[in-house]
Length: 335
Image (spheres, rainbow, N blue to C red):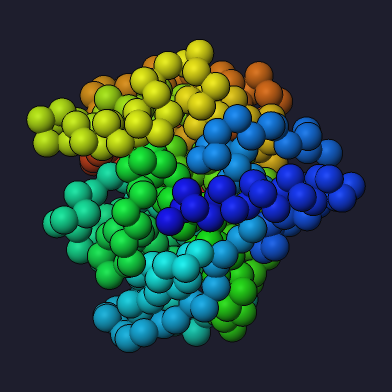
């Protein structure tokens, strides 16, 4: 599905370029406040990579609050859904009581087995903390999760559809014009795999959000993440096989794998970024984040990096509490 759409998009790009219209001008993100002074769009060397997503029109909208799930002392939780391309994506929306023109945060969760995943059952600590801090929180399940529609091409495109769903979550929230939300004050928070997705969003849609926070993120280099995304090999080898059928073996010298890596495009980032990582993380090695921080700073970007001694992939105790407090403070300062 995504592959078909992107192939058609490339034909449009070629036609527009031949008419003297630049692809970036013709296909810039409708919901994004794209910053000026960005480098030229990189060439498309494979149809299902980040340079293609940079040219893809936003397909988000039709945000629906479907039913009330819970009400507590601080906020109301709704089951919600929105349109992402031709798919309907499920998730949760937390709205603080009496909220008017409040900042919002879109959350991108880490890997969950789609077969056992339940809508909204990830990053519950972040959801609650941000909603209690006064943020309207939009949590996207992604395609193939919860009550979302299915995308059969997902693994063949190395899950780039998740990035599309997060972009379109922000776009749908902005276009909904909810009284509770200031559409110009939206932040993005991603954990683990969602941290890698956050990097993808920042380079493919500069200016879409005001700031981003990543927690225990994956690597910003796509080949690094392949092993973790296909672990354990005995049950998920098919995922790697599908990706290799599209892109070839994971190789940092491969044009396709380079263009799946947000690190290659960090010069396009326009938002301040905060990163949290435990030094004892055995799922996403701290070296991955160290390399991302170095690359962002080398590109002249604003990075607020925090390391948590002895903390693993899922932080706990005082370190966990501190990471959430820092997340709220960072968003308060920038969103």
